[in-house]
Amino acid sequence: MTEFIDFISNNLQMIYIVILMIFVGVEVIGHVPAVLHTPLMSGANAIHGVVIIGAILVMLGAEPDNILALSLGFVAVLLGTLNVVGGFVVTDRMLEMFKKKK
Amino acid sequence: MEYIFSLEFIYLIASVTYILGLKMLGHPETARRGNLIAAAGMTIAILGTIFLYQGEVPQLIYYLIAIAIIIGTIIGWVVAKKVGMTKMPELVSLFNGMGGASAALIGLIEFHHYVGDQLSIITIIAGMIIGSVSFSGSMIAWAKLNGTMNNPIRLPMYNILNNVFLIGILAFGAYIVFSGTESQLYLYLLFFAAITYGILFVLPIGGADMPVVISLLNSFTGLAAAFGGFLYGNMVMLTGGILVGSAGTILTLAMCKAMNRPLSNVIFGAFGEGAVAAGSSN
Image 1 (spheres, rainbow over the protein chains, first blue to last red):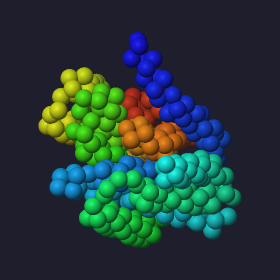
Image 2: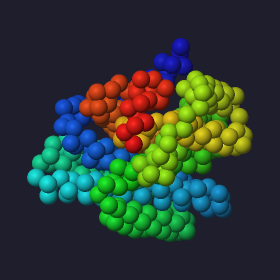
Image 3: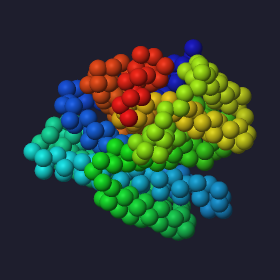
Image 4: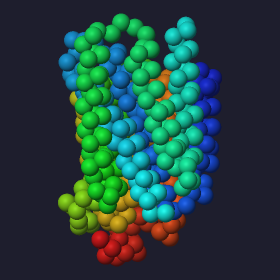
């Protein structure tokens, strides 16, 4: 029990962020027209590309002689970049298509 | 101290652009601008992470990061620009899988740095399981939309077996956390088990339901990113990840509602009443 309370008090700031972000996410999506579901999914897909920052941090903190970590980290950064760049570009193209139809 | 402040400040701005971008994506007239705003936020967050990093980093590592980003940008850009209009949903699935794989790899590399720190191991294991499931699931969803894997594959008692397998994975993950093991082998076993589960999870679902599945896996990857944020105490990963996790879940439910089916029916429906509808529409 004390461990649990310690955990809460040590990570209070993050717990606040998690709770508030859950509500923000719910609010932001509420009442979106069905035609925008796919572009929205695509846009959210690009945003979770923030994992790339974790991948970059792995690389920055890796020991230069640890070849396995460096190569896996390299792949992680590469895949994260694909997620970010591809995600935003494809969302933009979807929305471009919308404009023309209207 | 000033350095840290400015990086945190960049992360704050980036987080705001994600919220704003997602909000604007929900309205037809602002959607395109919203996407660009979020993209700008992502760019400054990435550049800030690289250039404001504190600590000694060998030149080689900077080169490797730069090469990875350049290659990724070129491939991602070209593929996204070249793809046909009807192929876009499967491309989203593919990119989603890349993000999941990236999250899983982070866990794979960082594990041995944090042995003994139970809380960090929990976040690493959770992020790795979710990321791996999202990766392999997205790949199957991509293959199904692509037409390479048309027929839903069904085995007797599929759902029960799948769920038993999932419980097994979670139990194994819990064992790794609480035994305090240093075994890299166990970690790889868990990684491959989670990959297998992702395949089994999507395999029985019909092609017509793929958009819902992709949206669900999308929110999974968001969660995996958020666990990474927990691990590093990195605010922008935490906000971005949780935001996509929660928005993605609501979006998944909204998509189900638009199809007039409950989510459980989409996921476990291969044997229920939905089987005919899911099978015949593709």
